[in-house]
Length: 118
Image 1 (cartoon, rainbow, N blue to C red):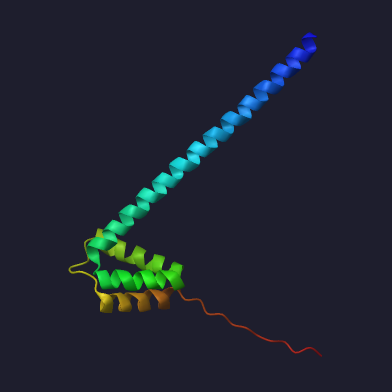
Image 2: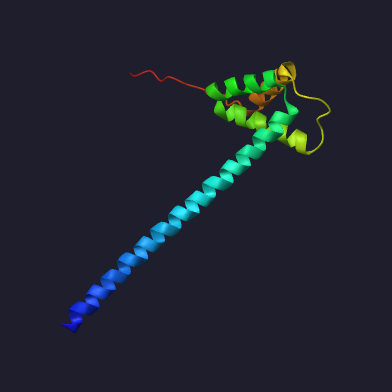
């Protein structure tokens, strides 16, 4: 019966090992989510300091329609703020200009061609 006990112990150890790995994965994922939430809170705080409420509202509306454009504009504004290039708050008019500039730079042109069947 010693062989059966060894098999049982090995199986039990394997189950324990898998459970420990699953627990470690969950902890790592929770840590990653917390770090991402902290980074996003920091981004929002910078934007809150350098933009008027109206401009933030407009950017939030853009984010609903074009999240990738809004993210690119946020990145641009944050880089300006961190490099000290902003002299005053960004209002709605300045934000419109930034939106246009970033949109033109990041826009992809699509060309669709149709081939006739013969």
